[in-house]
Amino acid sequence: AQSVTQLGSHVSVSEGALVLLRCNYSSSVPPYLFWYVQYPNQGLQLLLKYTSAATLVKGINGFEAEFKKSETSFHLTKPSAHMSDAAEYFCAVNGGSQGNLIFGKGTKLSVKP
Amino acid sequence: EAGVAQSPRYKIIEKRQSVAFWCNPISGHATLYWYQQILGQGPKLLIQFQNNGVVDDSQLPKDRFSAERLKGVDSTLKIQPAKLEDSAVYLCASSLGLAGGTRGEQFFGPGTRLTVL
Image 1 (spheres, rainbow over the protein chains, first blue to last red):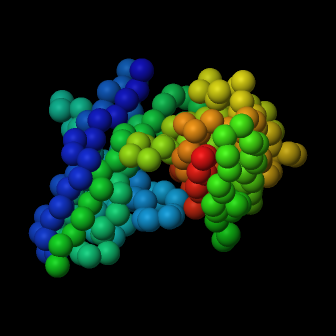
Image 2 (cartoon, rainbow over the protein chains, first blue to last red; image 1 turned 90 degrees about the vertical axis):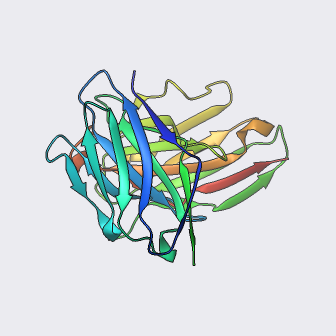
């Protein structure tokens, strides 16, 4: 069965600092992996996705993630945090052939001025 | 291109009452999903439709929850009777088709926040 673990329910960084949000997955099949962002009172917006092409995936707003099969990880990074990055971030893995997603519990990112 | 529309945005009811949520997916999207997001957790799939047929409803509490997708477009999710633990945000998403790749990319609506007192 597929599952996702996000380490750290809250992460706080200073503006301009590196952002690192951790995600580890478990999958019995080659996974598709996703990062979504959720701003307050809004739905989820896709940041980036890994679909078995390049292991380093670039997304919107300067985010990127690297798929590491040996570590079963898909950590999200951004070199320099901006105040507008403050939101909740969810890692997800495809649940099966029907396309449903299995989400982690989320990491809330705070950015200090 | 219009996104996924949901209504109402907020709903407060008392336990044992009934409630219904509505979703209009992106035009042309064959697959529609309903997720439940409890505070502090990630979204959990309740039911998935392909056109107007159910693909997966294994996690839908069928004794109180029901859903339908009329003519393969709009969808409604109903809870009757509601319990305190149903307080959550109900997210609707749609995609062109199934599985991974571009066709499977899911687009989410803003959600309906349900509070059960």
